[in-house]
Length: 180
Image (cartoon, rainbow, N blue to C red):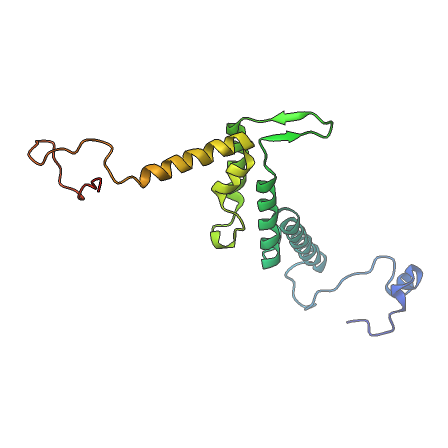
């Protein structure tokens, strides 16, 4: 049994009731099948549809979609947040705010795990970004320390007296560099 007439009942409730009655009965796909009432089947199907729509909406709202464009946008937002980190800033009221280097480091470390594992996509060098967030005075101190360490590495003489090969503490290793 089925309805094969015009669909005029879709726009008018009175025409619908005239065609199907006040409480229409939904027949099963196989009317001879006594399995269950078709209304229960439709309600179960509707519940599954609602659940699917809800899960899809949660995916979009809370997780997001996996696409290259989203990944690039997320990387750009994280990189921008790292570049915005500053030890010394000015509030909207004009008040100067100075954080300790440890606080800047904690903020910096909170953002780093958000970066993707593939570092070839990063547009920053993490250590340089952290140093850039520090005050100019600390940046100069770090640069001076790096220059001193670089000079120490270039020295061609040992910093400690060499141990004699006849000593009991002598451990053979790379040849000692001597002053030319």
